[in-house]
Amino acid sequence: MAKFSKRGHDVTAVTPLYCLTSTEKANLRQLNVKLSSFNPFYISKKVRLRSLRYLLFGLLFVGRLFGLLYSLHFDVVVMRNCVVGFSASLLRRFFKVPFVISLTDLLSGFLYEEKVIPPFFPNFVVNLMVFLESRIPRAFDKIFVITPRMGKVLEGAGAERRRIVVTYDGVDINLFSPNAAARREIRLRYGLGDRLVAIFQGTLEFHHGLGNMAETIRYSVAKRSGVHFLIVGDGPGREYLQNALQNYIQKGHVTMTGAVQHEDMPRYIAASDVGVIPYAKSYCTDIIVTLKLLEYLAMEKPVVSMDLSGIRSVFGSFSFLRLSKNVRELAENIERFANMSENERATLGREARQVIEKRFSWDVITERMVDECLKLATARKCVV
Image (cartoon, rainbow, N blue to C red; front, side, top):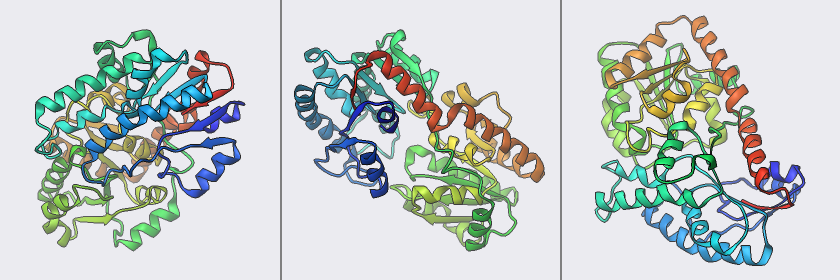
């Protein structure tokens, strides 16, 4: 939004903005971004019946978008997911305006995770939702995706190759920046001492590989690797993970911090030595690059991940990433990094940071996206 405004375009922000701080909203207003948020009800990763809320929001947003397009005559419309993108697929035939969609995942694909599917979402319903969601982008003039693999999936669902642009995802490198003071402070707060610390951070959801994380810890402790596991975050799977790891928490092998504000997350990553991506291979996790990975790398941490196609296609050639075919290999790769000298890990970390700064900073990614949008419309009004 800010980049459109700085280039002299009038911008209206419509989708939910309760995730922004008051300072961020004030900054947008100073840039003459009109905030016209659509919030018929609250949606977050912690609410009950989230999938049904997404579906209802998408339906309700059709009327809101129609009213905006009819009254304000925008020159380009940018959407961030298929929940709101559904409305554009219905309305684009009535308005001569370019539509752009930016995708970081396919939300319905996460429902394939067994523990996430409620009783009223049997597999045939999930299959239908995935089928429909993967075809929504066909209606857009430009489709931004974060991995080549995701682009191929959408092309297979009928999207034209010429409309698909692999922009990748981006991380705020100013926020996620190495911080020696924070490393000392967090280690002191949680009594981590000089132990090698492997971190898993973010929303604790089952499709984020909580089962794999628990098994990795069990295997690592059994091998007496000496690695301490720092789990930072909250979510629907927290109780499951706490119960699974209770014995290891009591014996000092695991620390679970609970919820942490996003702006504080870099401090916890700074306290670690290795980042962990335990995601199980599935329809959705195989086509994305999780933002966790970019945040670890921006903080100069080497990363151990399950072998996922999206991650392999983007970062598979770099030595600061080790891919693992199973949980045992995940634990062994963590131990390999643990057995490196501090200087060796620091060298890998600096290489990781350089790659992020050059190709995956949020500033670089958004510049690329804005350039692509303005190829479609050079006039002054934009809606996002």
